[in-house]
Amino acid sequence: DGGITQSPKYLFRKEGQNVTLSCEQNLNHDAMYWYRQDPGQGLRLIYYSQIVNDFQKGDIAEGYSVSREKKESFPLTVTSAQKNPTAFYLCASISSGREAFFGQGTRLTVV
Amino acid sequence: QKEVEQDPGPLSVPEGAIVSLNCTYSNSAFQYFMWYRQYSRKGPELLMYTYSSGNKEDGRFTAQVDKSSKYISLFIRDSQPSDSATYLCAFRNSGNTPLVFGKGTRLSVIA
Image 1 (spheres, chains in turn orange, blue):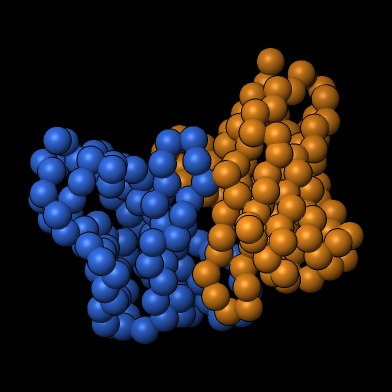
Image 2 (spheres, rainbow over the protein chains, first blue to last red):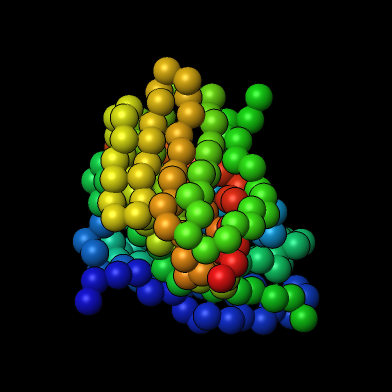
């Protein structure tokens, strides 16, 4: 079945550690997005990519990095520079001019 | 003025009630209007997608867009306990530009 797969579902990060969240889609969508969701704050855009090998910062990009080497994959790295990384992370993709589809999310917790 | 305003609730209704959820927006460039449903600890799933003023119906759900007033609504008829979730309005300009979300309204339907 076509869809977006995020892994892992739960992730624990120690202080000062970098971690990478995976997002893979087999929908043949050009554009992919990363959002962060905190209680009471809705979804906030971290990074997005409209084409392979190109990406743009969103509203809260500080402390995060991404790559887009393949159309199907858009991994997000949460670096040690991100001081408050505990949140629910959502990956989405959009077919041209249409609605966005989301993965099931990764819950990241700092321990 | 915020780009999107959505009452966070919580909203509690008895089973069988008609539910009305609303969002206002300020960006005249928004061309696409969406409603997503999100269950706890899950990714958002698309409920309704429209790109013009007027009504769109799908089963028990009706989406209404009033571009002149910059106001969108989602109506749920014969609400069920399974409708208990957070409802997010979302907006987008043309092409594959990122979605802009409301903060979500938490709905509880009591049996």
